[in-house]
Image 1 (cartoon, rainbow, N blue to C red):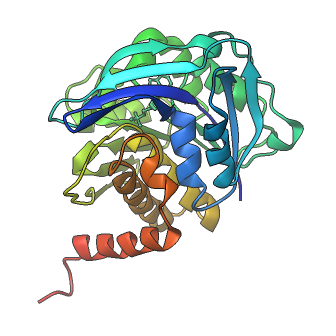
Image 2: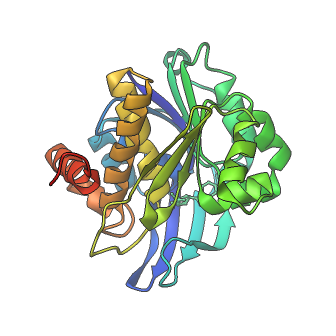
Length: 303
Ligand code: AMP
């Protein structure tokens, strides 16, 4: 089952304690699509400027990402620059230039409108809703956002959240959205805003899923080499949604496995700058690391 995603396609400039990269391929839509493409077909809705390097489109095509919904507009591509200190869990945004995204009015190609699985990747919540309203009968709607939109477009975000089944955001964003310092209480408050499920991403500490029924927690894969955490959240979401769409199962058991596939994909992505690790990643490596995860968290039946 294919996934429809709207999100940013960007040129990123990133600095971490281990190096820097200038104007490299990035964007929430890009990371999500690439990651989800390991599990299912992906239809991407986004806009790029006429300065966007053709080689980046070739890369997305090589991952079989459908680009019929990608508009090329007259102007400059979305740009983001950020830095990380030794605490790689926290990105410091230095600059956000919406450029062609500022005036983007998405018109979905007709064959995108019957999507069952929809992912609203981190982008203007008004745009997220505009895309969602063009989908006839979505079966599962998941969404990501960030401090930039929680602060700048909270009303629009709250409107979008009413139509969202699963919200995936990081811990600081949960607290910011709820205006509540305790994560568990903040999670309850967010669940009252619309989503039935909240996945709280905790960077190198893993992810916690909150539903009305309870809580599930999974660690992150312990890695020795982390170079660039940019896109980890979007890559996590790609593995999570990609797995769910591939098995067409929304049971608690499937959601738990999806969290682990999300963590697996994110763990690969942070091993190199931009999407460079995804250029060589094989599906066999994904399944091998999934098995390592099972061993990592096994505690019953071991003497
Ligand atoms: P993540 O590290 O998963 O939170 O996502 C990082 C990606 O999000 C980068 O590649 C950026 O291009 C993109 N990004 C950063 N800020 C924004 C924003 N305000 N709207 C949309 N995408 C953004």
